[in-house]
Each structure stands twice: as C-alpha cells, then as structure tokens.
Length: 404
Image (cartoon, rainbow, N blue to C red; front, side, top):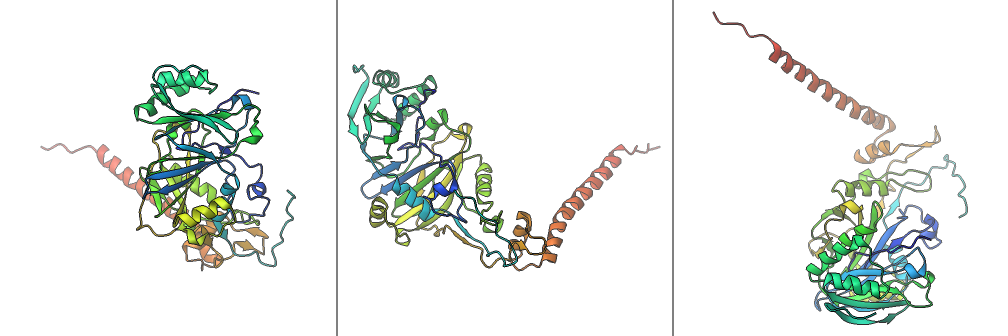
C-alpha cells in the first residue's frame, strides 16, 4: 500500500470521516430527511473565554499502514494532550444535523420497498514529549528547518511540500504538535485527539491542510461557548428555506447541493450556520457531550467546504450575542404536497420552489403559469435588449447629411 501522511491543519487537526452508507452514518438508524455528509472533517471547540482557554477535539479516521501514520499540526502554544471517544462526535452529529419535515405522501402514492442495508538539533525546543492513548507525541517549537529535521529523525514523516508551510506557521509564532502510533498499535487503535491550550478565539490553520486535502473537503465545526459563534474573517451563510425541495419518496432533498452552491458562491470563504441554540435545548446520553452541555451555555454548528486552491486563509471565529438562534429543523409539513397522484410522479424541484415562494398555497395551474412565466420574462428581456442594440447600431451606421 502506498505510504501516506495526512497533515491536519486545524488547531486540533482534521481527518476524513467516510461512512460507507447513509444508514451507517446514522449509527444504524433510519435517518430519513437528514442530509448525511459522506466525507467530513469534524472538530469540536470548547471555549472558556473567562479563562482564555480552548479545548479542541478532533476525529481522526486514517487509511494506510500503521508505520506511515503521522499527524503534525500547528498550535498557538504548548497544549495539554489527551484522547476522547468517537461517540461524542456521532451524538453531536445526530443532535444538530439539519432535518427536513416534508408533507407525507398521499394514500394514492405507492411507496417502494427499501433495500437492506533521535538527537536534538540546535534550534529545536521540545516543550513536552510522551504517550497518550495509542499515540506517541511531542510538542516542539524553534527554527523551522531544524524542526523538520527533528521530526524526520524521530519518525514523523514530513514531505517537501510541507516544509514552506512549516516556515509560515513558525514565522507566526506557532508551535507544532506531532503524533504517531506507538509501537504495537495499529490503525484500528486510532482515537480522537484532545488538546487544551491558551486562547479565546478558535482558529483553523487550514493552509497546511491544502497539502493533503481532497476537492470540496467538508468541515463540520461545533463551538461550545457562552455566546453564538460566527465566522470572523469569512462570510456567514444561512440556508434559504424556500429553495429546499424534496427529491425522492424517502425524504431526500436538495439541501446538500444548495449548501455547496452557497459556499461556492463565496469561493469557499464562508461557513453555513446550521445550528445555534442554548445547550439546554440538547438532550444527550454521551458523557462528554453531557459535560459540555453542563459547562457551556451555547453551542453553534458551522459547515464549510474547501478545495486545496481555496485554502489560502485560516478560518477564525468570534462571538456575537445579538445573533438570533438558528434551528436545524425545517418544517415544511404545511406545504402543498409534491406528490402527483394522477401521474404517480413527484413535482420537480423547480415546481416545489415556485409553490414555496407563492406561500405554499398555489394551485397546480398557478405553479404551471409561474414555471412558464419565468422563461418568457427572460426571453422577452433578451428580445428587448437585442432590439435596442440593433436600433443603436443602425443609428451609428446611418450616414450623416453634409451641410451645404
């Protein structure tokens, strides 16, 4: 198997989660009306602004051989390092994922059956070194070139593409956490990593991720704090409910496509706020999530998507108590039904969007008129512009009469 290294460029780092199917992504539960991200980087920030301290959790899912596993990430200062259980991420995903409630199919509509499913060089300061969970780790700072040599000498793989990025972060005064699997530990032993460090503003140093990122890499971030979190240096995006439509009889929707389109409109430099509520609204059975709920009064879920060429700015987050709460539930149960009993087919996405824009009260005839009116209006506009252009062009070509 090709040897590989995944460099994680978040304050705690980010590695891909690729569930095999939508059902498995929901922990074996049937998750109708809940969009499932088939590949997403997942990170939890717990921000204690009074103490100036952040605890960050990252889910790691690595594919490759054990000897090739290495994890190197910039951090603002010397962190406390620990491990966590994966169940906290799964629980938060289920509690805060966007959920659509569409009108139920009428009795006349048939429901199809679902299928089953080394030596220390000068210029390197080792701030701490040890083992935690399945990992050996070290936190170092100092000269960028000497750190690269030290990491390689001590079994942490650094590619040539990474070297200038290490220099970028050291120039900004950041240290590095490096992790690898301990002797005798395999890929199956990998656990989420926890780091606690001094800071009050969450930041994802995404520039380093560009070295190993996939196109349109999804980033799901939860921020527990005393107030609602929002992007500080990127665009804050929200979904338009009237654009969301049902795409099949199982409750699937166009939500993910719309969300990707919104992020693409700002060239990846934005996050969709998918959930922002007091933590008292959450009811969890996971010990870590229960602890976060008890300690922090507010939680925000933000979703981003970036390709390597878009990872030019490190996302930063701030807090704003004036922002209105954001629910993850879209209740469309009072909409006009998208099911057509006569044709035994569902209305198109566009038809549903027109119905929603009309206040969910339009008749089929009105919706059909709307569907025709849009292209006709566009065509009329094009013809008018063309005629005006022709008149102007003819006016320019008309020969001027000579004055006697």
